[in-house]
Image (cartoon, rainbow, N blue to C red):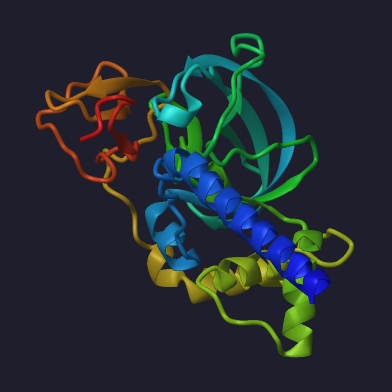
Length: 276
């Protein structure tokens, strides 16, 4: 009986210890989780309607643009960003381009030379890591630089408008679908579009692009407002009440918005120490 009580007491102590660790961990994580930012995650129909250009392309080269920017989200402050010029050749046109055309696409990247080694990011921007000869499905808008385009969801979410065409990244999706255990989700149409555009050997499938052109004909014929552009340089705007957000460099907002996002897409946050 004594032995049993000792075991029971030990188990209770371990349980209490585990609960305390969980509570401490929760409070330690809370400041970061409370800064979680929303992500632009559009379905294919919306991406097609919002874009000026949409196509399947192969990366010819990647080089610096010389254009840098900062982003003010609290968990990534101190990190310097730069835009890379991803020169991409159109293999399958879908919207606003012709086959063989060369498109200059600005993609966000970390400027390692200007970013301190101790810098750390939570809720980092959704950046892609392009390499020469890689295949992508791109949904783009013009930028403030003539002849240069960027992701519809730039600068925070490049990876939600520029998708690498690699079937391997969806192996689990395909497995569950074959087994009949897949639970349908809002991103399925995006995945299916990617899978239709490239085969197991990584070759582009013209039939997949033709299917997209037919399926989204109305969206392809829809053009965004003529003044819709992606700004490449951003700066921090602080309202009179202390809320902060990214705004295009040189822009002065006419109102002190405290909405979850500005009209330009930058998350709105309260600086540390100013929360109420």
